[in-house]
Length: 118
Image 1 (tube, rainbow, N blue to C red):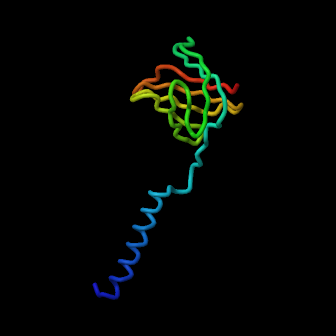
Image 2 (image 1 turned 90 degrees about the horizontal axis):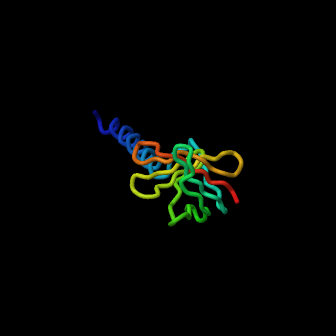
Image 3 (image 1 turned 180 degrees about the horizontal axis):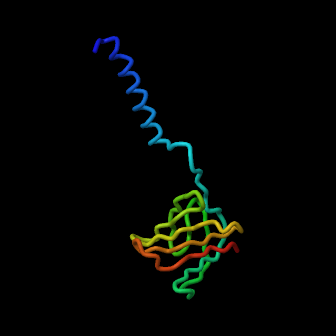
């Protein structure tokens, strides 16, 4: 391969590498992320159709404030919160200002959570 032919190939490879790196770092266009709206809620935790815990909660600064402060990770339809290692709750918008979703311990669904606006 001549030096003249090698230069365009190297430039093309560099451009592709930079574009791939930028897409990884900044994210690509595609699914938009939704936020769990800030405000006051009633949090209800369910298991097997039984209310285990019902208490005041709020969302502020991208965190669910319940017993502690837990970062909310945005998803296309709401978000999820890791309450402690292995325990995740998913918050899916109900279309009426609240959120509901499954509660997991590891890969097993152990109940559900509901955030109802107050």
